[in-house]
Length: 300
Image (cartoon, rainbow, N blue to C red; front, side, top):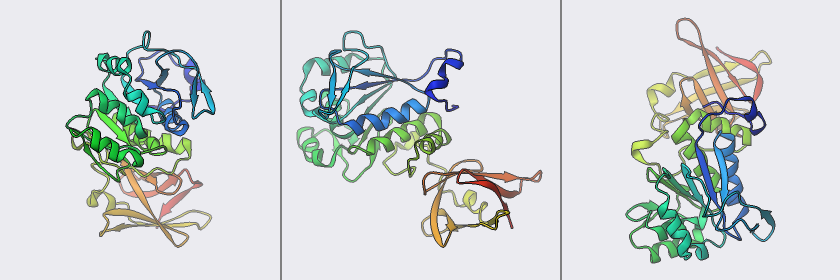
């Protein structure tokens, strides 16, 4: 999927895009909402906001948000998202729970922070693994015994349901969702645009739908080992770490992991820069370009 800015959408012919519905309740946590919204919007998805009514929502009592839809006219969406901030109260709202259960066209459910309590109440998380905001882990575990609660997980993916830990963890969960649906390169481009220092595969991913399965293949990664220098004499060293099964980039006497996102494409662990390797006609690696510097690094 090609990444496009919201301002550029009018230049493109109308295409069917993945639709994301963000459910908002009064008191919703701002970063819970804003982080995934940014990820999904920049990845090219159509994002709409839904609430019980169209009355203004006061996010954390600070930011006023007017929902696009209420429960009576909300469109069918592919991904339905719930957030923390007064989520306990929303989880006991029978009208909301019934509405969620009625959304038969929803393909994926996604929660951030205590938004997991809303999904738990619907039964969607029954017999699945899940996580939530650290201060709600006990609540989730004690009140919903059919759920296997994972502690210390940034996000948990069950295939069609993704739950995340609190606040900023929603960004990681949303980037994981983009990686899962559109590929690692699209997710990496999104993180680069957001200037978000993203570490791929830092949650619990569904085995049958795991976009990171090739990230630690030693045979693949060792091919990129070597010393690379630019015309300005800036030098990078790439070396495979057998113990941790990762490719390390040495720069200015520091070592940074680099993450394989596709053939000849890597994401760095510092500010999510992209590295693209170049090959000659014999398919030998001869150098790379990186979004960090406006120059070519040739292999010695």
